[in-house]
Length: 457
Image (cartoon, rainbow, N blue to C red; front, side):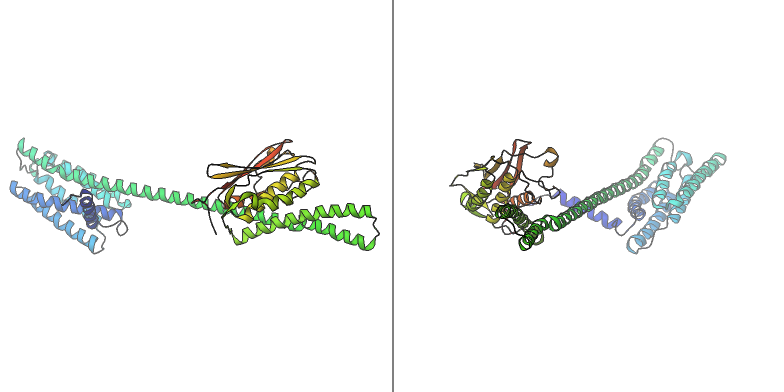
């Protein structure tokens, strides 16, 4: 069954109208207004010429025919030949035609005065800005002269209509001409304004986006410089110190006789320094690799306790050296979706940090519990806690390394890696801390594959 589609008809009408007046990309606003005026006047004259002939206004019919030919010629050359319309000829022709019509159609009692300002509006709409004042003065002078001539020589004016009905018909039939002209001009001015406003808004949005992009790039550059400075600091100082200690110890062994008690004390200090250096180097290598190669995430379903067993054993050995009790409360049947290497590194860093900032004889608890669609793993201690001024940058490379309770020192990359690696696995990380009471770091790991989880990125 045939269905009426008004939207398509409206679209066809709009396309037809745009074909008549031309597109904004090919024609100026003045040209498109002129095309619209021409189409309107050609259409109206097609009605008024036979009407004027019918009621006996032969000069009105003749002037209408002249306007019809003029506008058709100018419109055709402008729209289809690419020749600019003549606003000067348009304005002068209006003065001549309207002036003659004034005397042949009842003068001040006719309809010419009604059309006169509307025609001047058309002249303003299609003329260059520099000509507007000139045409305003010329039309005002012409208007004044016509009325002065009628006032002093009233016999010059012809009265084809009788008072009453004739004047009524003349005014009513002439009224659509200025109304249509004003409508066309105002419509185009408003549409042009709206279009320019939209373009300006789009440009403003584009500039704002560009500024935001520049700011983002600036921040990324600053962050990159910060990372570079951090890296150079680690290489030049933090890794150099333990190597220098080893070198000094070897010099002592080679040049001096050291008794067993001194040797043992020095070796314990060197072992601690070397262990710290190994931890630094491990984090540094992992972080550098992730920055250079991008994330390589391999998510599989694993048993949490089995994956962390070796990590827990190693960290328990470190905890015993400080007489710290390390308690593990991970259920044996708990499975999660994780990258094994990343998860082990995260847990190793969290437990190592807890050991570092927990005093001798303290305690550390590792808990895991199931939440809807995820597992929460918590590493809590009763250590020295985190000062308020350091909490905001705790997961940032801007954070400065802090010495532990036994003078252990990190490089400030451990928690940066933890955050990055947990988020790459589709999880998240957070912490709670009270100064002198301890800290709790917790991570959330998915229990099953989700659309937000990335594999083999």
